[in-house]
Image (cartoon, rainbow, N blue to C red; front, side):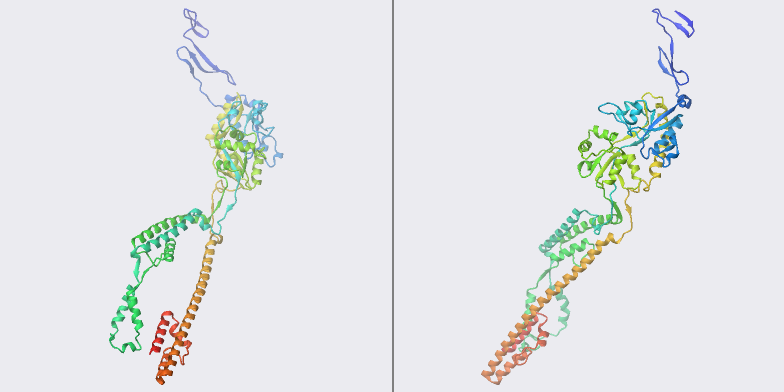
Length: 607
């Protein structure tokens, strides 16, 4: 059956079903129904609508004033200092106040800002299953839009609608800013750790001992003391006229002594070998190499040079590394933070930490399955007194008054804002623990959801959101630029930076004077003992000479007396007495000189 009806061509098949027809798909709008597509048997549904985000499409939004719920939270929403002089929306200022104005301008509706009654963001009570805060006002129809730092979460998305995030953030750690540690008196030791300095000391001692042992074992480190002396005395001895040693009168010559000839022969036969690298010289060589000052002795053997070479290479690397870091440690004032990450918080119990009561941060720790966060959540639940706070201001105040014994976990955006406010005594440490965003919320099925979402996307593409954040976070900051508190400040060196070097210099000079005094006293005592022994030996020699002279006089008359007088005169005295100044001239230099004097005395006596 085919016919032309009011709607066009009408056709039925043999079973009475329509065929060869199409249906228009209409959509209701604020003005009138409009066609968005059609449907037929061959192609099915075909969409023909072209969406135009025009203000006229949201006709009817201007016919009422929408309630925008928010919460007082700096810098998102704040009362002006002279808010009593204003009415309505003009009483408020902040990031969200300007964001709500921008959204209303792009969408085209009239709104009124209202503070949430209970001052909460929104959470579901586990007993009554009722929502509180701004989420509750949206769910129960008390507000039309929520423009606030409201975190987009799964449980909230199930009861209300969120736009795309207008700000991305994460949970961060706030602590009290530690005082800047100025370099100490011995800060020049800081470039290397304590363990490295101890290893250097042990390496220095070990290298010195090895060098001492190697020099003792190696034959190339030993040298004869006569080799250089013979070369120096050879010309003078050659120029001297030869003496007739065969003459019998030579032994009685006043310029020659048989003892001198015997000593010379003994020295030539028993020439001693010396080694420069004793234990003290080895320590001195290693110290001079480490200080890069050198030394007046150096190894001769291959083994000793190997030890010296590896020690020089070691000192080159150590000194270069030390010098590279020295300037930074002396001129930079560093802030030593006791906490650097969430792991540091979880591993200790001295510093308490908590979150906002009834917020998304608390929910994050409650549902997290990560071991570190589970450990933190277990601590926060069982802590006494409670580590949870009612609002952000209370948490910040607790951080500032706890003298570094409390850390507050909150959103990174708020953490960065408080860091820029006076008294500038808080700081953010570590990275964000998670990643989330703030969104504008509307009730389920609200006609404002799509236009508000498009307005947020447009503001983001036009960089208006970034401009607003810079304005309220950093341009209005009270603590300098956003990176000024994070960088270590470099300053000129002061006396306190290098005072330790002067202390070591003064201590070294004082130690040197003390050692010199000890050496002087020790040497004086040794010399006095030696002088006493020499005087006693001289007196014994004089006494024996006197006894010999007396015997000659008694037995042989004048001849014996003459012999005795010769013995006394050989000692430089008269009538058996020792003259002090004559003895000092001949015997003061030491025992060898005294042996010569004693020899002469005995010779005179024997005569």
